[in-house]
Length: 89
Image (cartoon, rainbow, N blue to C red; front, side, top):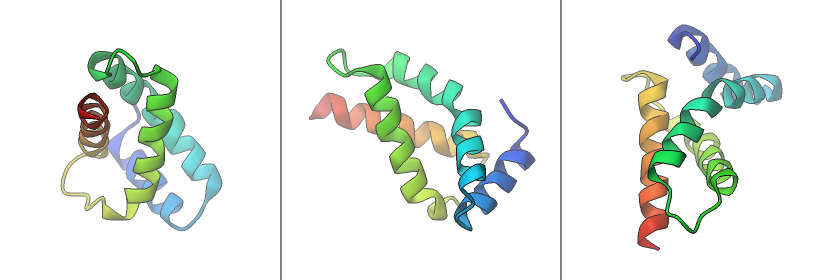
């Protein structure tokens, strides 16, 4: 996983609509999100679809990341909550 400073820089650039930074951010975080999905996904959901849904939520909520916790923790919470919501649906 990338250094938290690098991730925070990517977040700042992505918030300024830098598409390259957004792509780099997804690439850096994908292994974490995929691992969490495999551990928490509902059995009827395709892993790739769930990962895509999570990244859409992450990008939509990126401005809500306060920086008080490491980005990986925040992303993990979004991923796990999304999986739980899919199980409950």
